[in-house]
Image (cartoon, rainbow, N blue to C red; front, top):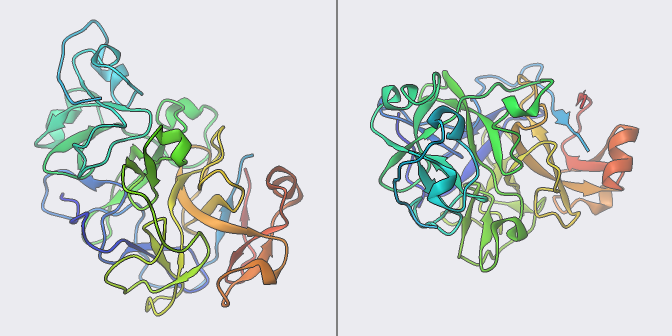
Length: 321
């Protein structure tokens, strides 16, 4: 499985009244290993019949080394130095090995050619493309409700459990992939690229979360580098970004404009899972996209966010925390 060219336009399709996600012509948060197929963060939907939006809420360089740390435990761990990863490789946030970007908090991983290379480190792990010429091993995870967030990527707030699919929208695996939360989380001189989930030195420019955008534009109009489709035809879109549900530190920029809440209606979004950023609102007039309305959040989520709802097309299904 191969990831698509990260230099191409980034787009996530949101079909009709649902949040069924499909790749348009852009790279997902992670591509998969070497089976000849592309990968997306979430599976595509062939129909929007009966679909509804689910809201899920809850409150430096690359050098291989040896060490006494068990590789199966180190895979996916945060790192700032090789000593944090034992025999694995530390990809720091300042690394440029992932198409010029690096994972927030660093990532213990290893180069791979096939899934078997990764399975030898930890059963169920996969060989994926996170960007750049090399593939790396990604830790397996389980989306949905879980008693322990450790099962969701070692309890990290900058790595999310994402559903990776192949070129025909068949689910390949649930894997831990980078999901930066904010510029501050990336560190001094770095910015969060919400289209890739990685940290970059590129200064973002463009429209904010929730603003309308053209999903078919050659270059992204969004500061987040990700434009989501409002309908199945991708005729209109909204600026969004990849994020992780239920992090201790607010994601989606951490400035109170947006919250990580949008997941596929056919998926169960829980703490530690990947999702999309939505603009917060108190009334329809707060929504920058004229086709959106302010959808009320449950009382607990209103209290935690300080806002009454989120901007999207009208929907009625709220996924419990």
